[in-house]
Length: 363
Image 1 (cartoon, one colour):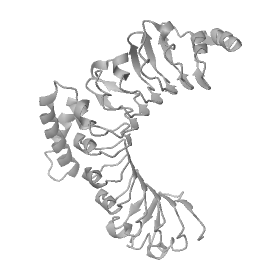
Image 2: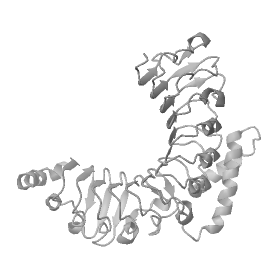
Image 3: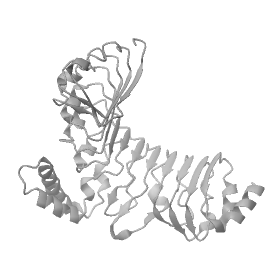
Image 4: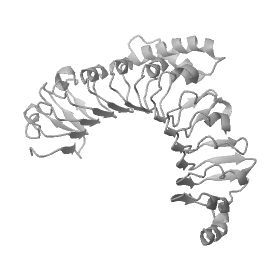
């Protein structure tokens, strides 16, 4: 298998164990560039587990257990690795990632990190994905990612938007000195208390101000106290924005207007999936002159000038409006004004079927 470049190893039975005699498995795959390990437990994990994989560029660990824990000695053979993904149940100390000096992309999903501080030292990091994290992400960590280009925080908890109810829970958990998670939550709660002194100014003004190179941002499912027109002020280079399923205090609707989108002059892709939206004015999308893809799936949109809603999207090439509701009623004939449209994803209700049939005939 010296010619093998991609290997995906996943054991179908309930988390199989690989013991010491099995751990020279990679000695005949020295040309590997991509390695996926899923639902595996390495019993008596030896430091030379990854020996010979110095050409490996991508490592994905999903529900993988190492006994003892994976440490710096295990990763010393992975000097060329550029991308690492860690998902689900796994016992690995995040500090070991520091030994991967050439790392460019990190994806971590659905686990609790012992610390977020490691990301401050990874100077070559340009992509960071932290999805569905079980502990709060410190705003100061985000501020330190000055070279990041792709930041994905979907469905994670950011320290500047912790609900009061969660703060109370954090206080109760912090009473247990044995809980590392409780100590972390206590630290977060203390910072929230300090940040509350700055509630008069929008929280986004300083969190992303150092991320001048950011081109991709995913804030899907993030909870916000409020959103004002300065939220995208630092995103002049942004090309892709996922801003759907946003949670606002008091069940508020997401208000879109020209001033909100004014800084996004390079935006190509906008995803507002599962949003309750109010559109202000007939020029809401006019600053998005480069927009080519718009996703409005499962959105409930109110626009006082619905007939002018599509006039601002002349360069749009891809539009997805599945389970989309517009008040006043969606006028399918207006979509014919999108002369550059090459892909249209629709899922419409029965009352629109007649209009849709006529729309297709005339398009």
